[in-house]
Length: 71
Image (cartoon, helix red, strand yellow):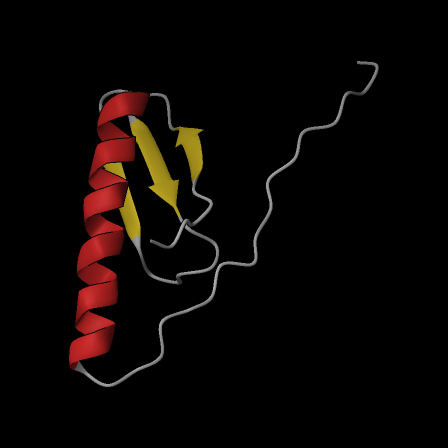
């Protein structure tokens, strides 16, 4: 099993997610849970299509961190 980092953004009307290591793979949802589930499905389908077309599956390399700043 491969684990990809996904980033989730609040767009104001829903949530959007993408995987920096898998360009073009995105999902949206009304909640963070929904967008996470949809992103998992989108990644599975994306990888399946890459395999079917003989392309390489991108290796995970992104690491998400948080930092604190005085604001």
